[in-house]
Length: 131
Length: 311
Image (cartoon, rainbow over all chains, first blue to last red; front, top):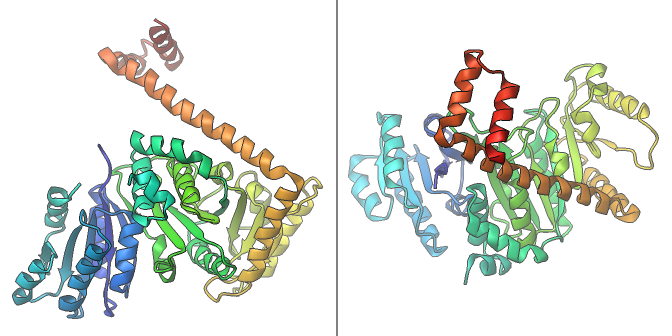
């Protein structure tokens, strides 16, 4: 069925830098997706509830504070607890290379670091949505 | 358990999924709603409309909180525009409602207009039914930021709340036809700003000129961001509901809207039927070419489509 991909763009944690998240949101919009933008300082619980209510295909999170090792997996775990298994979870931000394997193991399916082209993100999402 | 049963059991994921399916014209969802329609009718629908940036989302957030204090379950449909070029959209109304996200008695859903004009999403009619069956007492529909003539909210809402702000245009704006005419309650938001009293006066003067009726839309000064006067606004919304219910006008209003809804559904289906036929054998493309090259005019082209369909 021809339907727009729905993406929740969220900023978990306490850093106030949402430029990157907004650029991504805009790029996804221009690629024909419906982007639900929830703004700054979201708790994992809020992100998961918003993802459920909005019935999104993708949860895309951005963190620049360094709290990714804690917050990204927490979102994945809460989604699992709620029985949500058809949502693609991806992350972006200032994330050290060394942290990426652990994050992927925890269920964040892709990590995009600074310098990533928005086209790559769009392509990745289109190829990997689960329904 | 199927989606319908899960919805009746208060399963939030089922509620969300059904709304998506209706947005995507999924027949399975339509069939579920057909079956569950008898369970609807408890919810009262309040439309929140007004210019872009007038504070509709922030005010909806505060209104929802006040209704929650009064023990009501709240559904919110927040509509933002879809790009006519890419089909994409930024749905940003939730930003103002983040506190409500974890309240189990609130369900917020963002919707793109997906090609509908009139400030509404075509699937809003279906989404209201889903939230109603889900057990919500009040459903707020926040329209896209409107200009002067996007009045479709009146075709779905029991009460229309018009959100105004000080210093937008002069008193001529207040007497024009269009959105000013559909308001059941006016809120002047950001009324901590200078000019709020004048805006209130202009609206009141315009209401003075209306034919005398037994209900006059109240004009309430509020500040959503400062949480001022929200309880009074909620009282006014409930007063309008009481007025409609006591006079029996609620039935009239809903009847009128159901009539429009059925017509719209039939119209869509009929148009699809006609255009599918017209597209077969490139008839439609040929007609467009002929009109461009002046061999035909649009009226004759229409006649030819109709002749083709009648056989």
